[in-house]
Each structure stands twice: as structure tokens, then as C-alpha cells.
View 1: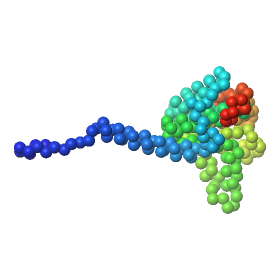
View 2: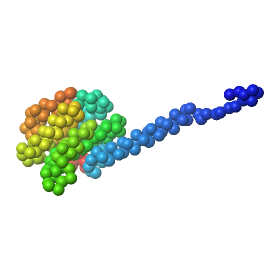
View 3: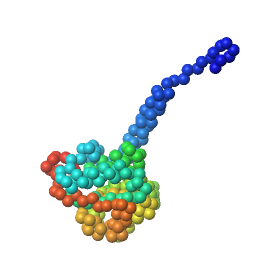
View 4: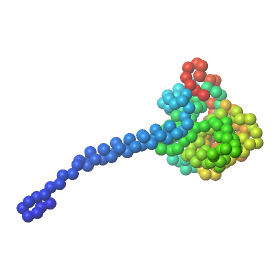
Length: 231
């Protein structure tokens, strides 16, 4: 600015430098948030290193499954909006948990979504603990815990005893998530028909609504052959 014959100047910082600093801060903030979400996702230590890039498809079916999971991760905003769920069905040692954990990391890193990995028996035990007289949590609290995450991954479906109380608990969680259009992934060593018998045809049908599908892992275990963790 000019005052009489004097000129007053104020120099600003380089706009490009400011923008770079802002973007670096945002990346760091996003990384911290991703690390927190991954820590809270309940990923078992054995599968902590699982990534999509480290999954080794041993045949054409495994390659198709990997491509499907990549597509699901890339389209997560649409999957989340539609409540698109998946069922992983197949033999032990074929990579079901590897892909589930890798998918979890991709969704968290790229979309900052809240994800929880658990097993059907952990859910049952958590609910049953609330029945004790000295429990500090109610059954509603536990159900809310499992029905509030953007994505819930339930492993070992089919190993429960099949009691009425277990069926009611599992139905309550899966049905609540279905009604809220929240995606769920079920992992089981059972066949699709056996899974349907365990969780009921009603839930099976709801799991594949909104573009959901059953991902089949029907080849022999390669854990012993490759020496890698692939459950």
C-alpha cells in the first residue's frame, strides 16, 4: 500500500508451500486415525500382516475371489450405502481370514470406516456375561456394540451349539444390521447350505440382498504346502 511517497509492503508466504504443508498435515491426521481404527478393529495378531498384496491366489477361483474383494473395497461407499454383505464359505486354509483382514485394512485406510472382527462365540459369551447379577453392561449395550460399526466381520459361524438363545442373539445382531443397512461379512468352514441351516434361510436371504454374494473357497488347504497363514 502506498502512503504519500512511501510504499508499505507485506510479504505473504508461498501459497504452494502452505498448500503442501496443509496436505501433509491432513495425510498425517488421516494416518493417525487409520492406525486408531485398525487397532480397534480386533484383528488377531496372527493375521496382522495380511494384505491384499500379500495374498497368493493358488488357482483361478482364488484369483477371482481376490478380484471380487478388491472390487468390494474400491466400491466401499456404494457397498456401505446399499448395505451389501458377503458370506465367505469354504474349507480351512484357503485364505478366508486373510482376505477378510486385508479388506478391513483397505476400507479403514481409504475410507476411515469403523470395522470390527470377531467370532460368533465371542459374541455369544459377551452377551451371556451381561446376564450375571454383577454385570456392568446390559445386553442392549453389547448388542449396540456389534450393531454400530460400519462393517462387522463374524468368523467361525457354525461352531456354536445351536441353542435357541444363541440363534436369538445372532439373529438379533444380523437382523438389526440388516434393518440399518449396515454391511456384515460372515466367515464359515461350512457349505452355503449348511450355513443356511445354522443361521436360517431368512438371514441367509437378507445377507445377499443389496448386491451381496457368497464367496466360495472350495479348494484344498495350502497352509501346509506354502507355510503361510491362510484360514
